[in-house]
Image (cartoon, rainbow, N blue to C red; front, top):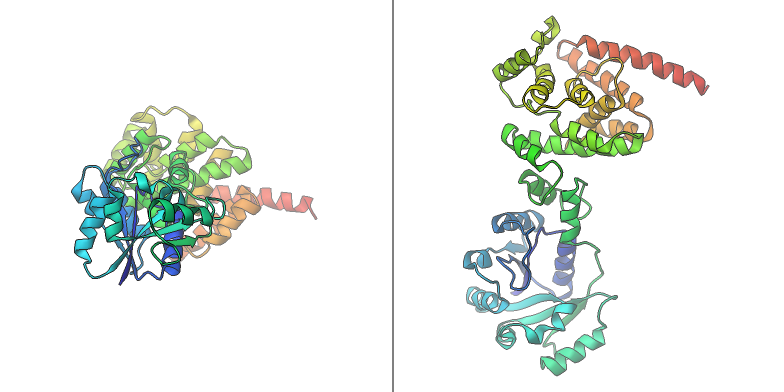
Length: 397
């Protein structure tokens, strides 16, 4: 069996890593690739380095196909991760197989400086990926022959042209750190894992740690997604992006609290429930959330407090921030209800009022089918939108 060895920090693993592995697998006719996250790379120490267990898990999420194997042998060995120790150990695991060490062109050009590089070459064959914009293939061949005594023509080393995939772990970390969607750079699974486990510094980390304690994983991820959607809508519609992000982040802060906890915090916050509200506990978390922010966290910004309180029902006279959080809650990334694509399209191509009206209609149908109560605030918001949108539409006739 022909087995590739692909080591790295993988902090975090990204689509560029996977693209390289897939290209090399094809061009070197590999049957299997062993992915090996380093414990502590000998020449790379970063304060942003995620714990080893997290990097292993993220590799398992990204490299999920059967022909990949994620190995924690360097993690278990601990200490500095020298390649010679790894390939020696792997040779014992695979005594009869051909082993190929996957490296980049820049790494080949300094390979003669690697610790015990000659011993490495007794156990593995080098498989070098090269891009058009890097060192010329001819120069790599010359270096391999003159410095390492490896002849490409005799198949003693493989040099494979790989189409570049512009991406880096630094890019992914930066996106996560500033609260921007990174799913164009890594898989959704890796991205969500990093966010759920609070890897890499990001906005409002203290609030996120609090939410992590108060919410289950689904609701925590939903809160992160709503924050990002709210910031995007604020950018589109001229709102305050920072305020929108924060309001979206905390909008469900009391969602997983018990009914008793919600009632207690509402009493503390001076909320008196109407008959409709008493008979619809699903509405409580929004009112309780506003009270929690006000009484326990000292939030005094009335726009944020209002956006949290009315993110479920809406109300007549919604501010821009109210509308942004209300819509962001409907279109967040993990939402998969039947009309979610329509909602997202309306939010980004029409306007917030059109999107809110559609959301209310969808909600009313769902509630009526289940014979659930409809809050008067929602009805008032619907009536206001109908009048406003009809007037707007007549202008264009």
